[in-house]
Image (cartoon, rainbow, N blue to C red; front, side):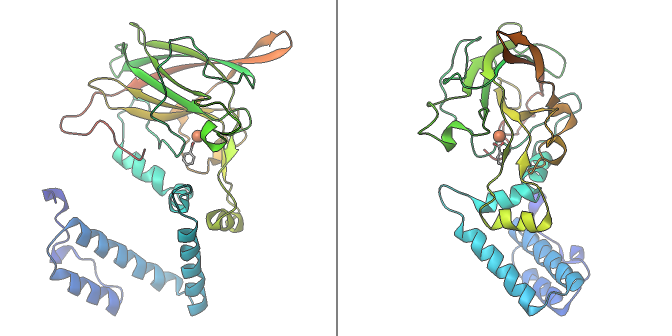
Length: 302
Ligand code: BEZ
Ligand code: FE
C-alpha cells in the first residue's frame, strides 16, 4: 500500500450514526491501516447512513437482496450485468472522470466499453472500415495534436463503431464480416488521418435483465446516442480513449452511461446527395496531453 492510502486514523473516523457503525469502526481500528480498511469504513458508514435515512422494511430489504442476487446470476463470461449496473448508475463514468481528468483544451477521456477489440490490423489512410458496404457513407477526417497545437505524426488511431442498425460486429459475428467498422490507422506527418465508414446508429443497452427492469421502473432511458469510438496512442502522450457523438441524435441529452460531454458532440454533416444516396462527413480535432511522469499511459477500464 502506498503512503497516500494508509487507511483511516482513529481521529478521522466520522461520528457514528448508529451503535453498529461505532462498533464496526472499533473493530476496524485494531486492523493494520490499509486502503481496504479505509474503503470498508467509508462504505459501511455510508450504508448505515442510507439505512438510517431510508428506514427500509424487512420486505424492502429482501427485495434489494433479490435484486443483487439476480444481477449476479446475469453476470458471466458473455454478459456483465454488474458492469452494466455501474454504467447506468454513472459509477463507471465518474471513476473514469476522476482517473483520467484532462487539462482544459485536451479531448476528454471516456470509458472504452465492452465492444473494443485490440487485434484489428492496421490499414492505409483513406481505406474504408465498412467491410460490408451497408449504410449511408460517412467520410471521416481528423487531426491529432498535443496541447500546444503541435501535430502528432505517427500516432495510432483506433476506431470502432456500431453499424447503421446500432450493432457492433462482435455482437453479430455470423452476420457482419470480421472487423467490420473497426480500423487502425497511423497519422501522417501533419498529424492527419482520414478514412471512410458508414453513419452509425444509436442503440439501447440490454433491457432484458434486472438492470433493464430497474431502469424501466425508474423511467430511465437505456439509449446511447449514435457515436464513434476512438483510441489514440502516441509516444510521450497519455492514451486517449473517447467517443465522438452525433449532436443531432435525439438521445444526445440522455446517454445511458453519462458519456456525452460538450467537447465530444460533433456534426455529422449531410453532403449533397450522390446518385440519390445520402452521404455524410465528420471532421475532428483530437488533442492529447503529455504523459505525466510516473503515471501509467493507460488509465481506465478497457
Ligand atoms: C459502448 O459505447 O460501446 C458502451 C460503453 C459502455 C457501456 C455499454 C456500451
Ligand atoms: Fe459504443
